[in-house]
Image 1: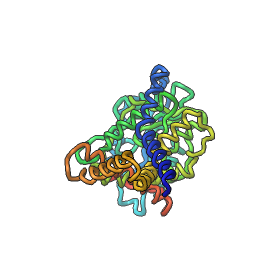
Image 2 (image 1 turned 60 degrees about the vertical axis):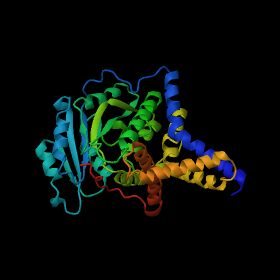
Image 3 (image 1 turned 45 degrees about the horizontal axis):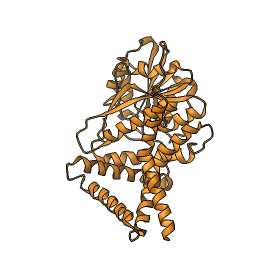
Image 4 (image 1 turned 30 degrees about the vertical axis):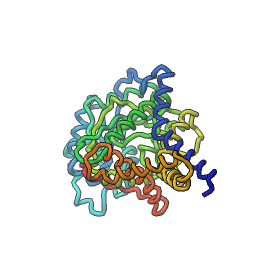
Length: 382
């Protein structure tokens, strides 16, 4: 590699990594302050619109009764809440008691479907639901009593089409550092919501106006595909941090990497062919958010490879490149010891390397094998 080209690759890739991992968040914080710290999401008197709470479930017989009970205990008028369970079945539906236990627990509507994946199960539930607002949750997510009221409040603003809540991970025993990453992600999400709209949501707790619901490809989950599409259609997608839910955390970094790899196979489908890359319909600030937080973050494995290759080509060309080589070697060494040495810094390094690799592996899987619409529960989350 010619030295001028190697330098250009090194500095541009390193600067891009620094921007997407750190600079973007700092810029959001600075812009929020300049704008007088606008609220994270609008609020107001929304009344008590009818809400359909939809739970897509596959082989969830061990948790579905508790989930339905949790939904029925929410602080919302019972005659304005409809609990819908869509059972995404398998080849032998008689071997799974999810539907039976959902009915026994008091779900208002339970539909049993052939296996088609979470998105198609949600589509089927929406088709039979009656609520003015559509709320969604995972079978293993537990909502606080006031979560639905907090989730619905931003819809007092007619310009809001989508609201996601805050999911917190419990059972922090083990090596996974997802909780640390997720707190940073929630901080970024708050900044995006205050300034424009969020760039992604989560499957544990979110809601839409019925008019904002859309049918997407079966492999393109709502978490990533809905927020930017809502923005393209002229409404905001916001974050309501007081709408709180909890889920069990995947216990190990290795299992978290496998979960991220599966998730990214779906995410790359949305990035590459789901319309995310098209700027059409994006306000300028939101376009920058999508590019910074989603496209560049997901491309970070490729940026790391570019930095590493350029560093090797420039080792004899200055202290900066030797320092960069030492920093990269140190990160990998810390990650390698993270599974054996109980140091928080080593565990964080291991988490970062494993999940960054998972972003790249998800791209490989999508390009090489495609993405399947069906899913299985992640290890240790039930």
